[in-house]
Length: 152
Image (cartoon, rainbow, N blue to C red; front, side, top):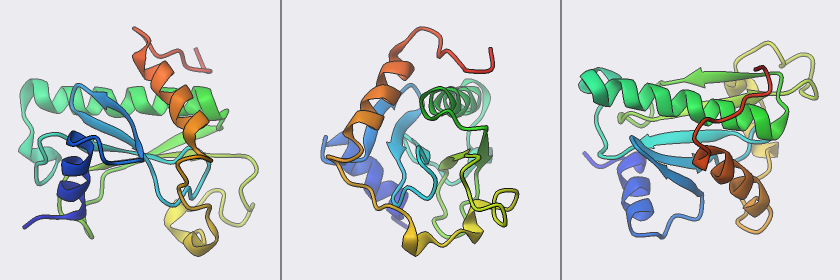
């Protein structure tokens, strides 16, 4: 069954997915839509698989390493306090990882709760022009041999 993840990876392969930050060894780093917190990203595997358990050995390690590298880049670029990582697959039953920066500026009532409790209708929608600089900064960080992290 094709999912939104399959469709997005297909668009990324064709160079037609505006949210692409960079091709990584295990898949595609993309900006989230909407930007529920500034810098929200996803890692989409290529090829698409059902879930993390469908990957083995080096492929599994590469996906998890790419997810952490994307988190390091988001942390460094956005100045977030921390990164939340989530691999759910309940709505879109295909592997994809959410890389969610958490910021001190978030509503104090929501700051320590899952980002899914935020009002997604009020979040900034992805805009290619508005988010070009963010995508460029993240791509540059991901192109570095080692992604510098603000905590190192």
